[in-house]
Length: 157
Image (cartoon, rainbow, N blue to C red; front, side):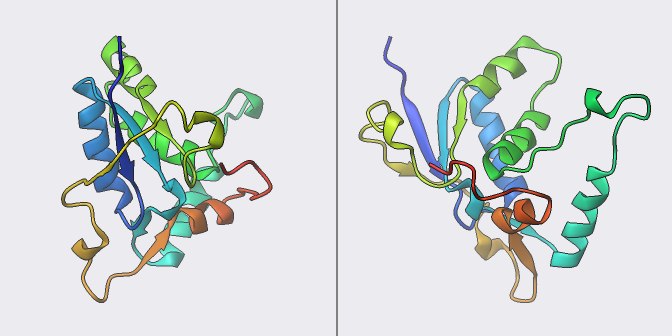
């Protein structure tokens, strides 16, 4: 059985709009590869976005914080969690759908180049940065993740 992968570039795509359409495609059974996750954008002012996510980091279990909840700090795992939250949680089809989505921080790593040969980037409609008006503010996912604790010393590719 040959698996057909669909390649999507997250550069300058609005995170919520992009992930919702990826979640739909994953539920329909498509295998998806997302590159440049760190270049996705979140609309809003920098201060508001940082405050919102820094407040989320303070949520923990009162009895034993080692039990969770755990907060993703890398752009690829952050985006995976956003997509996962848009899928049916307790149903098998949601669990199977998230397994079909492969997300990479920048480009495709060398060890996976042979798996994803001859992939052409596809386009997601209505998720472009152009949807924002001139005065709208936004930050990149990389900027947010660095602010909440991502250290770039981790492997990017």
